[in-house]
Amino acid sequence: MMMLVKTTLIDIDENNEKKLQKHGLTIEQIKKFFQSNPSYRRDDVHSEGKERFMAFGPFEEGFMFVAFTYRVKGKKLYYRPISARMARAKEIRKLYESIKN
Image (cartoon, rainbow, N blue to C red; front, side, top):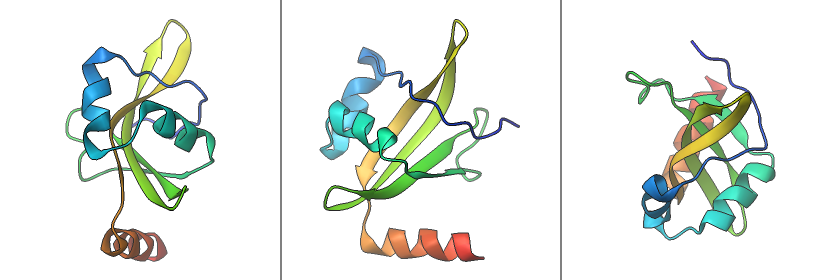
């Protein structure tokens, strides 16, 4: 099991760029979000085969979720975003309830 580690490097290439923008966010917004000191947690529900994590927190005028994994290139550790979108109020409440318990 991989530990959750913070890094400042983000791996986005043409393979995942369009997928990341599917929910209306730009690549620059996603990068800025990772720099905004979001909260992190392991995503046990979707970690089948490859461990996944979630970054979440207030961003601009809402609340953002980014699903990601890690990628190592050379000796450097990168965030590899899988999906990014703004969250709905019901999802935010559910997330905070799960953190409390």
